[in-house]
Length: 309
Image (cartoon, rainbow, N blue to C red; front, side, top):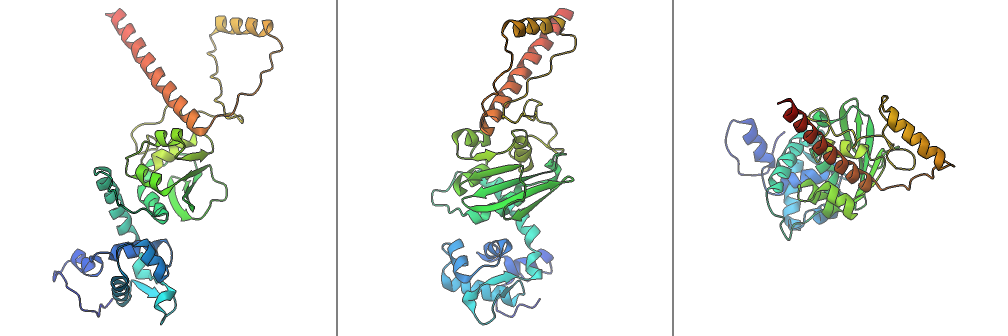
């Protein structure tokens, strides 16, 4: 790679310094971010980078083309658009790493009132949030629709991949707007609150919700979290959407007789199917039940310990 345009350099024999000589100027990495998503026309880049100005964008694009990181889709026509070269695509992982760092920084800062959000940035953000160490043992696919920008994450054999476009057979279909999506990503909005308020809609089994949240770092699940979700949160659901009743203990003779008597007195015993519940309702109910069960178990343990003393 030979850069022919005159630019200030760090003049250091260091790989990082050489890299920053090429991509360290303002706006440069954001241009690369846009082209990582897909090739862009000149006007699309202007729209995605408010504040850059047309002259500065033209200068940055010309420099990146000279550096061998991008190439025009149609040589000779600046407005036709640009795409990353093979060398340019090697910046994918470094940019994901910087995005992860930025999500952490943003989570500790108040929201800027004039900050711009774009739905097209969501796929890269999810890719930065996903961590294979947090994948579950279940192979499934989560489809996201962020203000019309559709992409999906596939978990298979402990590895997660993010791809543009809709999934063939998604386990969950998650829809929200760009503003809510980035509020969640910056940890400024609780995901359960977003579900209950309707800011986020989810179609699919409730048991998959905590696995999806865990994968993107917004919940407690997966092999790298150090804990597993409560059984009540990931329990199976029947076709009506209501949680299955727990199986009574085998030694519950008295309870079984009582239930049989009630059943005989109240024939016919055929029950109407329970009304379907939303994923948000089932998830919140399961989380509440898990908390109550945990408190009851703790109280029982303390009582036993007291009697032993």
